[in-house]
Image (cartoon, rainbow, N blue to C red; front, side, top):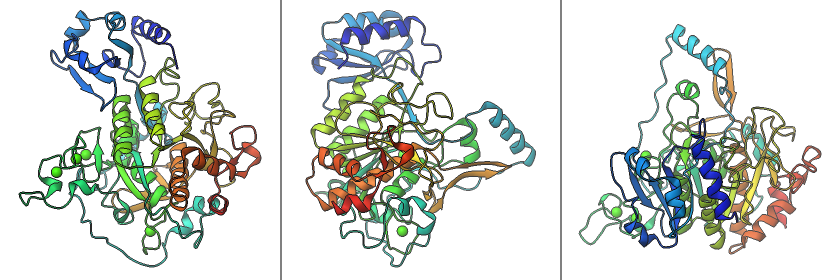
Length: 494
Ligand SMILES: [Ca+2]
Ligand SMILES: [Ca+2]
Ligand SMILES: [Ca+2]
Ligand SMILES: [Ca+2]
């Protein structure tokens, strides 16, 4: 635990310096109160355009967005020195951890020129927020035709007849850009909130009656929640790849992750996830540009834990965006601890480097957030290629990264009932689905597999099972805690 004094002193310095280039917005704060009730007597209540106050569930943390007028009236120092305040920190920005290749302004400029010259027309994509699909299974039988393209599944030892336990009964929250819940290979494995299904006393459909039927704080939340747009449809809005690559972000990131966790197996369609009978809870807090904030992440984590997810798949974070950030996102760390206290495991992408592509990615020295936090329920995952070498972008850390998993040129589900290992391949510019983002859901699926065979396993038991069964890999010796890569065949034989 950081001492509050140190935390706020650093914060004051950051704000005094104007936070130039920092990934936070001035006046966008998370404040921990001794007692949230005292907030009402506090001068931070919504006041003026752009001002906002929201309590974060049953926690002591409150998200406060100060209006420009408030920022003139109230200083960080005022907040910090209030005896009711335990901690104050920026509402740090977070982003997805897929290693898209067009960070370079020069490449983007080149692409923009080519797009303009060729009069490129974006392909049609599904409209946002499609209606919930029927809960009646689509079904299907037969081999998954693209299974052979999933090199990672073979690499981790996922094979037919591996186990009778295929993740059944385990809910995995994919906390990301949303999920295409209409996807033919995901729809039958989507988690559904039974408390918002069926008919109410007046005979209305609970999923659309505008009532929070199960009293969980969210209205008509049948398939999770969209904390980015604040609606009940956590759909993965995949805009055109070129547009999104130009602006950063990635189309269909959450959908790609969800497929690796739990695409439906043996349904004659597409691919198969590591836990093909597990359920996917779709929680969106990253926008279509792949960006979100700490408040959104906390709400998603708390929702997942409160609504029955046993595994959280987290292909997002930040590394080096804000040098002050490392150990200082106490609000996020607190939410991960709340998950730990409920026995929920938190699988996290280790991160894709602090300073561009290359091997300058030691998480021990430069922590990735949240993967490097010391909460006992975190499993931090590095990305490997088909030759069991680190992806050139992948973080590692002898103390802070736990295990390797497939994360280069990963084939999975994409928005619109498509499948791909390639984000973009045109005008001579190619980007494949690479990232610790892609590695993380393999381990999340493995945790679900293990839990289905060992119901009630503790976080420690699951983590031990994952790490102790890892296949030793030369490149990973001394670079990750387990010294190896995910091996579900050995894990399930334990
Ligand atoms: Ca509800
Ligand atoms: Ca309802
Ligand atoms: Ca939405
Ligand atoms: Ca399938």
